[in-house]
Length: 336
Image 1: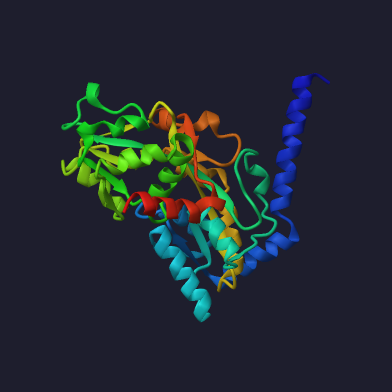
Image 2: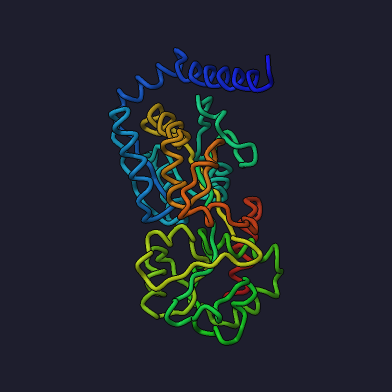
């Protein structure tokens, strides 16, 4: 048998095993139990994007289970979950949030293990996961500029370019002192560039905002020349506005977004079924088309040309979950 034939046979065998795993009696019981529950509630810390509802509709069409989605900023979501757990009035089944925030929540004992999911084998080897956090996509953050205020030759090309005195008072930033994209940017750039970088950035008088979905529009209106950190996939949501997204030469800061099941969730079977569905090719391609990096294997050739530069951009790094509290303390010290 030729190596091509052996390879083909191996691929078929793997696909057959994966299909068989999805049809085990135990998993079939979970699917039926999930349908009997009839509902699953997803709390999302990724506010305002249309992609989770799109995946939810696909899930509903396939299984007939209604998905209710509540958007909350990462810090507000964490507090709501703590309150629900403390009062034993739990409404959430699944949480979609940054990996670091979910790491904290796992250590607080509010998450449940998701168990053996049929499609776990699809995950890429280079994504971080554990028994409570299931990686769903990776999102790159760079710099946004107003194209009317900042001409091409004047645009920052490096994270350190935003320290130029000409940008003083002209920078809008996601709040680095609370959980979210801002804190991820702070932690990553602090680790790579040191405290001096942030002490200089603080003298630029950046205005902090927690209204993440509105920030790009404020830059588009000319209230500020620059916005950091800018979710580069959001260029698709703001493509008719005078905004340009920049991947700095050092690379994008990035956040990995994970799913977790909530401890004592009211719909535990539907929660597991929904989490497994997020690993399907059809769900992952929703995020690929939205310019996010998939967490399952085999989609490289299916990245659309119009988002390929964003999906394949150089990455600088992300935050260390074990340092979240320390990084937030540092941010509050520097940005008073």
